[in-house]
Length: 553
Image (cartoon, rainbow, N blue to C red; front, side, top):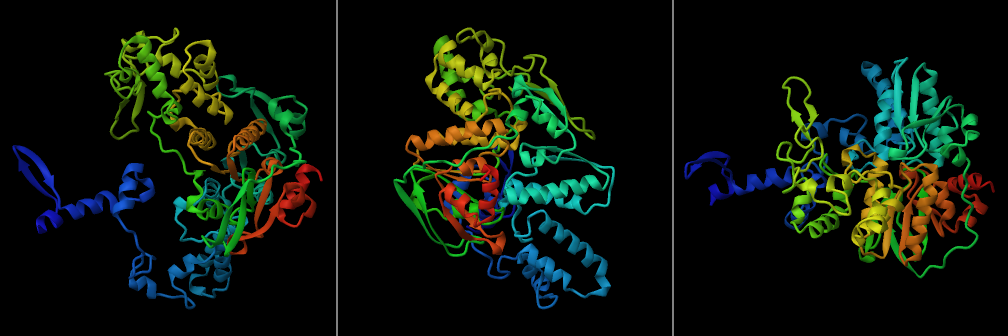
């Protein structure tokens, strides 16, 4: 029994085959307990949740530090206590240290902590697990190492640095970008927010459309020139959504009582049902903690958060959304063969590249090289599979279609496949009509992945949809389309709760819940709940003042 449970890995020979035998408990620890729960595949995570109980270590109280480290103190605090402090408080504490022997170290530490506060992350603590940061927070943490840099003549490239930022925080971000420029650097920013476009010295506008319809420089010049240029961005730069005249009447309410997750301060709030509710507030005010962590378990909420889609280069929009299943069945039925032939990960795969479309060559000391497979010419399927057609197209040609093109093909133009058409409709609704069905997931941006997830989860049966910043990565022209989608969801009888900073979504809401007044321990309270018109009229919160300026009230 001891060997069965605890034996160290040892080589054994069974019927002439060399195997490694390991006791059950070490094997379980290695397979499940030593891995990050969030990184596990869903079915393994479900098993772990059923079989394993995670508890705080009583010895170190969850700090993961040995006794020697915990007993070393500066002004009564050990390193775990200091890391648990909110960064804005920690910056104050560091400034109060008078230690001449390590003065340069303390100065450098103080500057780094001040950068956190400056960039709007003063509400975090240093012991916060990286996996719990939102997309915008993670990106701003990466920026901090550059803010204090003394380098000049460097080119910085920022990809949507305003993701997850309240309009109040965008001004701060703009100041930081200008400071980097003024130190003698070149700053390239990929951005949709008009507030950030407005500070540019030079604008490059790409288009005119998306995907195959884009890729052309439509305009180069000043912001004023962009406004007058007539391009899609230029036309939409000054778009404003008016505050709703009439709002929908709620059909019920979700009661949240005594919410204390993270920085929430015993929050009681009623979330109306059957309407479009926007939860807003400055970054770090407690929005996600309220919406994702405090809704009643019996609410039946379908939650679409910011966690990234995990997918290999073999995954694509067709496989991720489940679109490939009805398409394969339609091909199989039309040709009298098995559906498995039309999967590049199964029977139909090109034998030379295993259905990858490329052959990877490991060059030892140098980076590996991927070359297009000579046998299938990158089409991933066996030649015999490509002879089977549906309405004149083979499976490779279908996967090369854009979502918008495929919507017509599976609707009226070619093969009628209602199950596929429904999925494609949802992809168009979330503004992904330009994606190719077979495009690897690894080539999609963060905003595209989130909207792909949104389109997929919309098929789930649930009365309450919770969306976390659905405007992430959306062009100004696409925001209007998203508002239409949110309206259709509500009008079909769903309750929609959106965590959002975009003023257009706030103005379009039936009900707003504003958290604040600040971030971290300065937030965590409901500072306003009511209609957008009331919020604009009262101007009692930071959000109210920015929304009033946006709608020109």
